[in-house]
Amino acid sequence: MDTATPTYTPWTELRTRRINAGHSISSLARAVPMSQSQLCQVEQGKRGISDVRLAKLAAVLGVEPAALDRSRPHVPPRQSKAVA
Image (cartoon, rainbow, N blue to C red; front, side, top):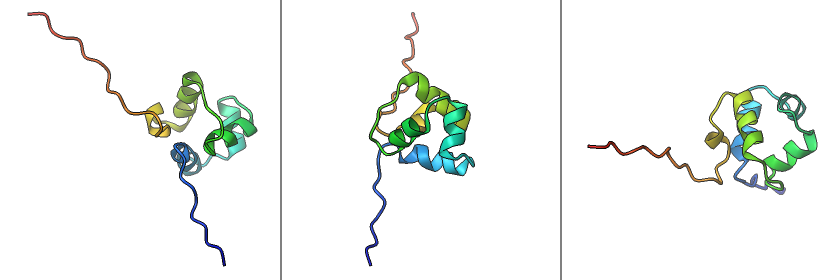
């Protein structure tokens, strides 16, 4: 019996969050909006996604965009230096 381990992609977190939020691929795709095929390809790591669409996905799922895309390093916002 072949017991293949699921492959991790940078977008595995997107799929996990989608399922935990109770969304199917079709319901999340409609909410964003994007095609089911596009969303499936993003989850599989076969297609990129724009920052705008990533932000829409995150908003629908109630998370920050960085929580979905593990391929992009988290860079905290730059703080301005106080002038003395």
